[in-house]
Length: 382
Image: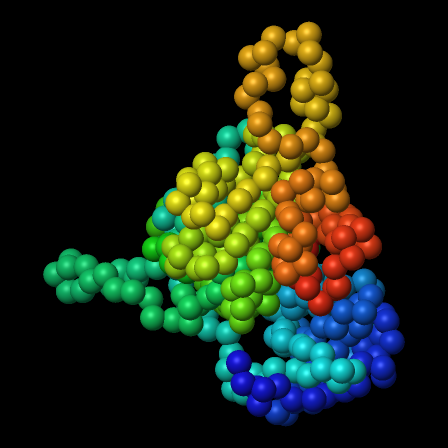
């Protein structure tokens, strides 16, 4: 990435925590917000009726339009409260000394393409379903002949770990609008696009759960900076995942394995119980062929921990789990990560907000890792 791709827009000292400032880049009005020392940038014009978001209210990671109450997530740009249902553009930020720089977008807009739903795969014992979409486009020609060709669009050039917006159609009266963004859980090296999510009671999720095979959905993207570092593969990657937060790591691990990247990856995957471990079969298979990959599973469900410590139980009830128990902590990490690896690694954290907060505290305070070596992606659920 060229340095010329970024332009200085503000001094970080001028934007206090929980405050925002409007700037202009290439004629585009953008708001920069400071949330707990991290900076986010999205478009400043409400996608509903053009209200000035810079004059709105900032609460947590959301900015509220002063005209009609639409809200937008600063991290993803998605509309989180109607009447707006179209997302805001998001902009990549980096900090040099105290200067805030924004990546120029030029005239580029996220492309929208149609993907065909192939199949859904339910994870037994959970509310999680994966949805696969074709990378091929079928064109019906005269005489009934079908022409199959690759979809030559930018979405298919996504980086492992990025997300996209999915408009599945037939969604009504959903308070969050008819469009959702999901991490693309498939790797760019695979011959399909996949999203994986927990099914909830929202109209969108209920419609998604009944998505028919052959249904065409509109997809826009990709977006997001929660991706593998490419500058120096000598820096190991340590993944800390919680529940459904493992989805970007599936994409990254599959990509690193297929591309035979010389990148050491250690993942700590935390779940309530072993039934809730997503992609375990695939992860175990990839670990066998990727010598740079190590995965540590840990479960936190109380009764399973008690079963381990109850020696009176038959051995068959305690011998089927060889992973760890309890939440990820300093002791668990140091059990599998040596001092040199710890010193050189970049940390990637993905999971629900409480897990994110706990892991950031653990890494920065207990392991004394600077925040510059930590990447975070939150799964708030909706």
